[in-house]
Image (cartoon, rainbow, N blue to C red; front, side, top):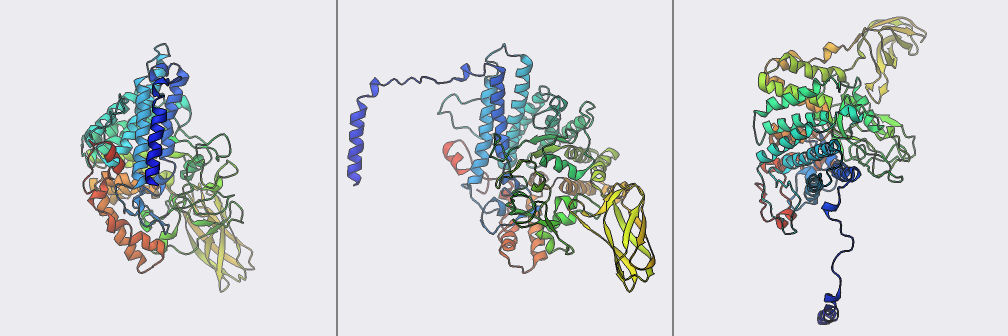
Length: 616
């Protein structure tokens, strides 16, 4: 049979080969770059193509399977038992290739646009300047994602001139960072203010400045360790903070930040830049993501919004919060969604007291599909926007850079305290029964009056005819319905229950409770550690934690600590997910080579000038 196929192939070459010279080889409709980019509309279409890679980048695995959440979450699925999420992989893993390819496709699109931006000089120069600024910034941002993950990479800054022009050596990490900063600085002078757009989905001055602060912090840290960049990071963050036109400020409500993202509302005071998603893949809009699906509370309920739910919080993240920090019970859900047959907003609250063992069994709660507005809800995609930089991040970056330069100055401490005050509880702190009364046969009604707040739901606890305590109802946002907005302690009254005489007093959380403790601000090192924890408390699950641990030079050490802590916390629990987590997972597989991803095997094959990272 093999010989027959060879003979047939030979005959086909003979038959058709004689016709080759008679064929017209010239394409009839080939579009050269020089004949495109001729109108403002074409420039904007090309720019949209550069933006499109952001949608791919932040659509799925970056939120749960790439391990970008560091020590904040763990992968809960029983399979696969190898991959990036458990640090068991080779350079041939497809996730490395897809990440690399997507970023270089975005870079390539930007290069073509930048190289042909002035094909038609009659296009309004202001339009061309804006397009150039946004394309420069996006290209630089894609390189930033590459250098964080792979170290030094080829710096491709022009479209290829030939199909043979494929061998490009790696630049050093320093060279890549220097180019990123240079391009972003140029972009900062070209792009429009955020107020020009009125939403955070476009590259704007505030976004560029904020990301420049982040890039400079990374260059100041490992592996480049150019500490002169701390001053630049501080300067760029300060530009955002001092921008009177933009008027950036924290959203008064921490959970409100994410409700806006979920419900497609814009808050340009807080959200400087976000990846926009919309639709359910059954309408005209197909740019959907996976926030709330892969990293939200699990549910099979299509009315709530199906959630694959690939990660849960670690106990370390839970205990990183102090009592009174209202961010905890939004970031770490206090409930489980109902079954497929129950209403969309049905929840079963977790009433078991938290300990170092069961704290691992809670879902991340930042992105809750029940609040989505697009109906019907898609089972594999969500319309929730992905935040790339928020004003709270800028405040924390300013504080970190300032501390590295001058220690815990009042300005640095206040920047951190602003973030903490916004997230702090303004409800009931304690209730003290001052007189249990007598004769109570049923629980009396508890009312809280005065104090300027609202939202308390509580019931009395009785024993032996006396009131012995007060129990607060469960609340999906704040954990317990202890109220919000109190500026003074409310008065407590007990009525009914066939008894009398019970009295109680309340204390409330105050803004002063949120302030960084004196021990944390006593010197540069304790404040450094405090800021690192504060970044996790504020920004957990937003894809920054692993990169932070890496630039601080503590990634391997921290993940080993986490592995040891998990094994200590869970003991001999042997459910497959837990085994996956602490036997197959974090610590045992992580070494210095994991501070960088390997260069994808396919790229080493295609580009003979590439070299592999150490240890791979």
